[in-house]
Length: 213
Image (tube, rainbow, N blue to C red; front, side, top):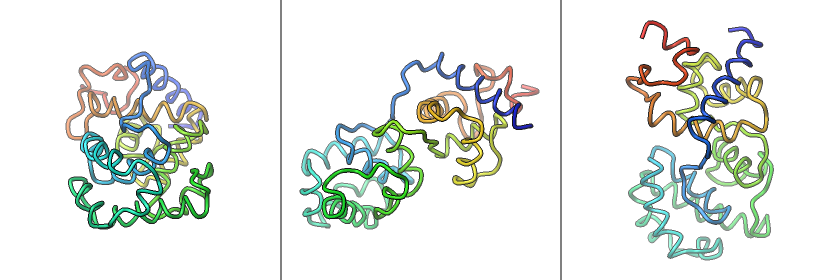
C-alpha cells in the first residue's frame, strides 16, 4: 500500500474507532503517574484485568514511591506473583522507584530517553506514559496495535519498534495515543487474534484482510 493510501487508510480507521469508542480509555487502572508506569511494567505477559486486581492490593499497601522503594522485595514478589515474572518485576519496581526519587525528584521524566533509562521500562511503556500523562504524541505498539494495523495494511511485520516507526508516518501525531487505546478495545471485542469477527467489523469495508469474508 502506497504511503498516501496508508495515510488515508489510517484516517478511516481512526474515525471509525472514534465512532465505536468515543471515550478512549486506558485499560489499566491508576490514579498517580508512577502507578501507570508500574502497572504497564506489570502487564508484560499478563492481562490488564489481572494487573488491575494485583495493583489494587499493591498501591493500597504501598501508596507512594518512597514506600515502594523501601518495600521488602519478598513482599512485592508475593503481591505481584499472579502477574508472572514476579522476581524480575519486583526488582524493577523497587529499582525504578528509587531511581525516580534519587534522580528525578519523585517525578516521572517526560522524554522517551528519560523514561527508558528506568529499570525495566521499554518504548511501549514509555509511549503510554508520554501520551496519557504528558499528552505528547505517541504510538503504543502492543500486540493489539501490531496485529490490527498489520491487517489494515497500515504496517508490516511484528517488530514493535519498526511498527511504531511505520505508524508515526501515517497516524496524525495527536491521534496516536487515543487510537492505540481504541485498538486495544477493538482487539478484544472484534479483531481478535485467532479468528477475527470480520462479519461484525465496522472496518470490513476497507480492511484488506476482510476480503472474501
